[in-house]
Image (cartoon, rainbow, N blue to C red):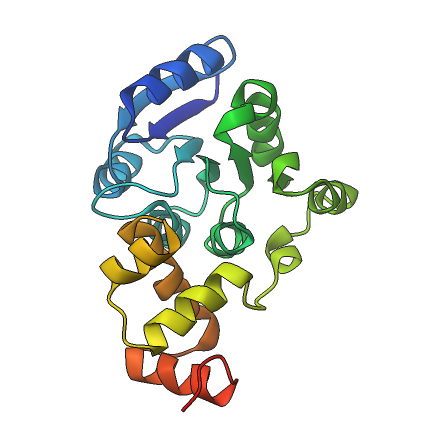
Length: 214
């Protein structure tokens, strides 16, 4: 019996391409365009695997993975995304992902990544950095989240500094040439990693580490 896959991506052409890529080896049981639908359809269909993008409307892919891992832990979570910042990989594997595939190389990587996930092994795209992919390959049963560490990345430090300087998400997005959604992701991830819950606490952390001056 073919393993059943649910695709969650808000780009119709990507969904079509992924479906064509996988249809010979897997059964595509559905496709959804946002995180909220992904949670509902995963509950209804109980697929073997769900493909998630990081940036999705309503509920982002990381939060969707976290909720799925809590409520339907038997479903294997595979990210297919353009986001290759180490912070995203750390967040994805910490949230319960089994595999992280770059959209740019999905045609070469995705089938094998899904096979590994179904064996309860982890997969890291080589585009995340050859060293990380090789390290992950040495022990495919070990969650690679730690390889991407909880140390702040340069991008996180930039976001933290601008938050501490009182900039809004829109202003930070303009300053760093990224989307407000990406700013929000980094902001939430910073709070999770640092164990804080408010902008004031983020600011105090930045001051204590000399990231901004008093």
